[in-house]
Length: 170
Image (cartoon, rainbow, N blue to C red; front, top):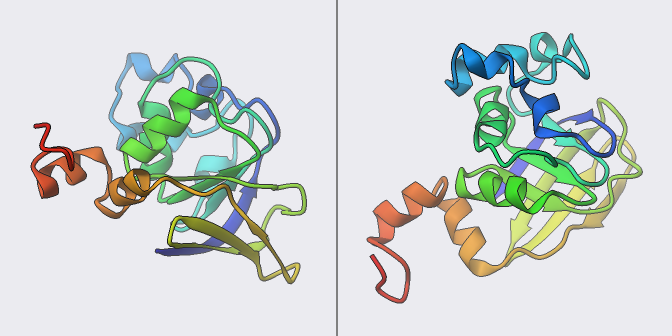
């Protein structure tokens, strides 16, 4: 799996309500509708400027706050296939993987807005290459079950393809 795109950079402690405001979820929880309001409280221009293939880059504690799944799915609906951060809230991280959104823990300190990035997954290792800066960094390894879930497009795809868990659990 390899993903290439433009870096869209945010800071630390990006709360799920910053990703998509609670007030927007009153009218709809459809990620395709909500993607027009992605990050509106942090960067009002973001939703209008996001391009398919962009890669979110953040500091520590990305996705903190409430454990709403729509925070991950609205990112995907905007065409973003990967999020890189120094750390994630556990609930956001699992929601991302379960929905097929690649979440990579890595050092993001040298990535700037607009940098051209590629994220390659090989045998559980994530390598983030910054073509703009001529550098690369290794991400935290992903367990094989998470890789299989991502390769299946998310947990539902994995369960459909495999009829349950590897141990036979339905």
